Amino acid sequence: MGDTIKDVNKILPDAVRREHWDNLFRSKTYTDVLWHQTTPAKSLAQIERFSGAEDAVIDVGCGASLLVDNLIAKGYRNLCLLDASEASLQIVRDRLALDADIPDYVCSDIVNFNPQKQFRVWHDRAMFHFLQEATERQKYFAVLHASLLPGGTAIINTFAADGETECAGLSTIRYDRERMAAELPEGLELIEAEDFVHTTPRNTEQNYAAFYIRKTH
Ligand SMILES: C[S@@+](CC[C@H](N)C(=O)[O-])C[C@H]1O[C@@H](n2cnc3c(N)ncnc32)[C@H](O)[C@@H]1O
Figure (cartoon, rainbow, N blue to C red):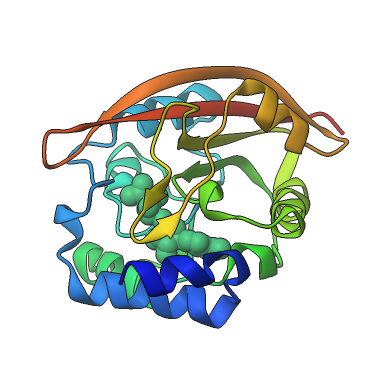
């Protein structure tokens, strides 16, 4: 991993992106990756602020995060996990080992996702900031808009303006309020932004920004 992948990052086609992330999730213990959290408290609070347990929630670029375990423990049942990496979804399937048909698993690049229903909350922690091309980001927001119920909320967590410039061997884009607002198409409104700190499993700190976006029409 590293330089070779980083060099092609700007022209990363779906299959390469998927292979990159599959390799990562197959070669590392998911609890060791820098973005891992033992308790995803920030994301839980964000989702609970904008939804109730009866609402439909999608976690895009879910990875092998423990967020879904925590949401299920809180009574959420209408959950969709989307990731480009089948390997990450398999880790979650094996860990949850539920007989019930929850959550829905979708293995897809976000830019190709064709939602079959709409969600009250769209949650993204550390996925959007990998999208290097403006056309990909436009597709991301078109998919997001189609996926949200009217009045629904998207929560997008990215590296902050003073945050990391790469992660998992890939370049990342850093966002502040102005930069995120400039990305939003008609029908999506940035209602709030805040910076926060993530303490990694190595006890280092990473600066993140959270963006709360409402579907207005
Ligand atoms: C840094 S990890 C974050 C995982 C999880 N959200 C968390 O907080 O633990 C980024 C995740 O986004 C996924 N991903 C990256 N680009 C993607 C894309 N274009 N479409 C769907 N998933 C993507 C990766 O496979 C990986 O699981």
